[in-house]
Length: 527
Image (cartoon, rainbow, N blue to C red):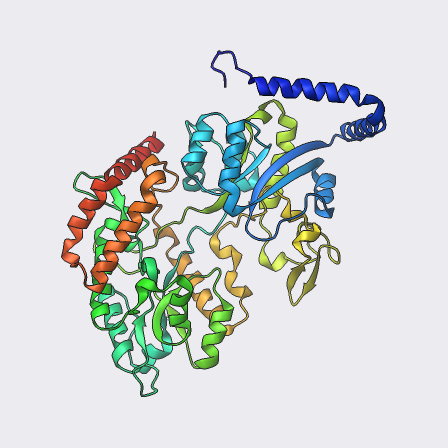
């Protein structure tokens, strides 16, 4: 947007155009045949009604090639030629920032994080408003308002979230066989959890006559957080300060209760002694080695390799997850997650090309359309197409697709703008059915049922989708400060009675600005 002012064109840009024109004119006689071929190809595309669509996205692992059968299948189906540019996720933000600053924004943009960058780009007019499409396309209509509204800027929606389970966060898991051996019930409060952790440490729950077990597995950064519901969730903005403002759970009374419990357990030797220096993988091994009896789990993404290792050395092991505890204020339930993993935006330059936008949106809606697990078979035409056709892009073995190598470029879904099927509910994914180990299948299946049970009591975190410039700049530093101080409290280097002083230190260092900005943003969203 030039705001009515004349746009200054750099001298280097003018010279580049002049040079390009000169070279082109000089080379007409030499490259005439190439030019004719290019013109013929363009005319063929035009007559066939095919449009080029530029696309930039991030990748975590292998990179699909810029050409391949998968792209040709998309061209035939949606009448678009996708021109993809895939960037390793570690370099993506810097690459995308350069594109945005230069104004060379691709037609379709994949974005990793909902942060100040996105909100600034939207306010600057980089993206196309998508309000009308949310009312038109089935998979966009399915997006809950609390997820959709995270992408709202000045009344317009500027992005489409890529599916990720909303409810399925980590819950506390215990060794059920240890509980049974010690004749202990499944904990329903932190006091009961504390007693179980001490019993796991001092009462020989595995019955081998050795003092080689303990309670909670913990690793650096106080992970996992062992929250048993929204009241104790460090990421939930649920509690309020003396001014009535919402505050992060990391400084709330629920978190203080958890830290006090961990401090008490540390004195009893019932929590990982060297947790402050153990990474996440090492923390996992404390539980899956059979040493610790309390950890966390979730329906999606559990490691069968770890579970198999535990069951080989402890074949009698059984597991149980706990339901959310009843909080002091009477609440009982979990907190929503953001509800997406990355998102898709369209360039505002497409405003004058409604036909192209329609084709892009058709492709997006197709990629997001949910196929029930029971229908994910070669005889389902959409499933077969997504995977590149049976015998070409994939084979089918033991009830699951075995895809061809990414670098072969045979799978259309690799090139779709959004290939995350939007489930009508987290439970529709039936993640538990995909595990092969019976104990893991049973545990995750019980978790899925539990999340359904508490679905209507899920707290929608008002912090999600709120821009806080201070948090973007200093949030990581301030969170680390709290983790360090809370670690000291657990290990006895600082008393838990210093909690209010710790909170004041956080507020003074920038937390006050974060609280103010987040609460202002929440109120603005309500308007």
